[in-house]
Image (cartoon, rainbow, N blue to C red):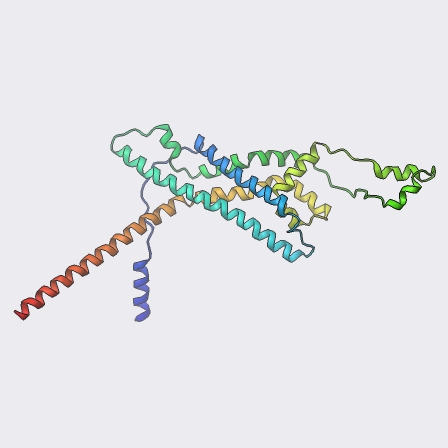
Amino acid sequence: MQKNNANKNKNKNTPVPVYKPYLRGNMVSLLAFRRGLRVFSVLVLFAILGVLASGVFAFDSAVPRLLLNGVLLLLGGLILFNEGSRYGESDVSFGEIALKRQNEGKEATAKDRDTCYHPGKGFVSALLGAAPFLLVAIAYALTAEKQTYSLGTLPGWVQSFESRDDIGPALAYYHESVPVGVAGYLRIIVRLVLFPYMNMFGAGDYNKLYLLDKLSPLLTLVLPLCFGLGYLRGPHLRALVHGNIRLARRRQNRQERKAREQRVNKSNQKKELI
C-alpha cells in the first residue's frame, strides 16, 4: 500500500511531456549554414586538441589507449549532441509562436520558416560544418597509400666513412630528403581531425593506419552526426518544458485549494465556538 502511494506521489511530481503543434520550417536555410559554422568551430577545436594531446593519449598499452581516446570521442560527441538539442528546442518554440501567428491571420515569412523546426535541419548543419574536413578526407582516401619504413638518422661516428668510395654512396642515401607532396599535407589534416581514432588504431601499425585513411570520410562524419541526432530531440525537450509548466500550475492549484480548505475549516471552527 505504501509502495503504491509512493508511486502515485512520484507520478504527480514527474512532468509528462505535452506536445503542442508547431509550424514546420525549411530544411536548408542561411540559419542552417550559420549553425554549420558552429559545428565547424567545434571540429577545429578538436583538431587543436589533437595537436596538443595526441602524444599524451598514445599509450603503448592497448587498454588505456582505447579507454581514454574513447572517452575523448564521447566528450566531443556529447558537446555537439547538446548543442543540437538546444537549437532543436529553440526552433520548436519559435515554430509554436509562428503557428499561433498564422492562425491569427498573419503570414509566415520565409525567414520565419527558416527559423522553425525541421527534423532534417540539424543534419544539414552537421554536413555543412563537416564539409571542409569531409572533402579533404575524400581526396586523401582516394590517393592514400600504405606508409613504409623510412630511414633514420645516422650516428655521428659514421660520418668518417662517408668519404670512402666503397660505402660513401650508400651512406649518402640517408641524407636524401623525400619531398612532402599534396597527399602528405592532406594526411596531416586528416590525422589531426581523427587523432583519437589514430591512437586507437595504433600509430605504429601501418596496416591499421592505412585502413584508417580509407575510412576517414566516414569517421569524419561521426562527431557531426551527434549534432543532427541531438537536434531531433527538439520536440521532446519542448514537450518537457510544457509538461513542467503544467506540473507547476497543478502544484499551484493544489496549494491554493488546500489554502481555501484551511480557511473554510477555520471559519467553521469559529462558528462552532460561537
